[in-house]
Image (cartoon, rainbow, N blue to C red):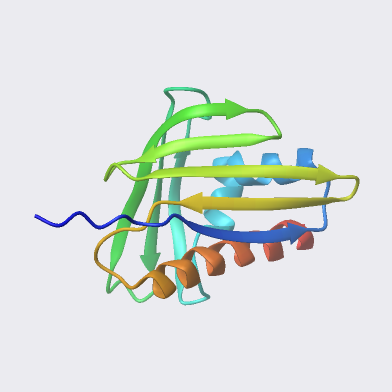
Length: 141
């Protein structure tokens, strides 16, 4: 049986806001529901977040026309406030998010294990679109 090594995927955005604001908007459910979707025809009607080691999170992402929805969730394995969030998604993949603050801007870098269903570029594009939506929301509020 052949083993295929998967390379982690990284997406990044520079948000024009201090790291404390970026962290708060990333982690508070009332903000998560405002940005955790890839395009204007999607939304996040529900979010739960217990941001601590061994804490759980769940965000419902749904097409606005009601045609499709799913829950994205997992368990945190490492949380360093304003610096790092690491978690395991419910399907077993790992994610690491690094927040690098520099005055009034913060670089958010997400690195995640790919899944087996969709092409790598499609996965990168989807995660980047959500991150870009986060940037847009955070900078506008």
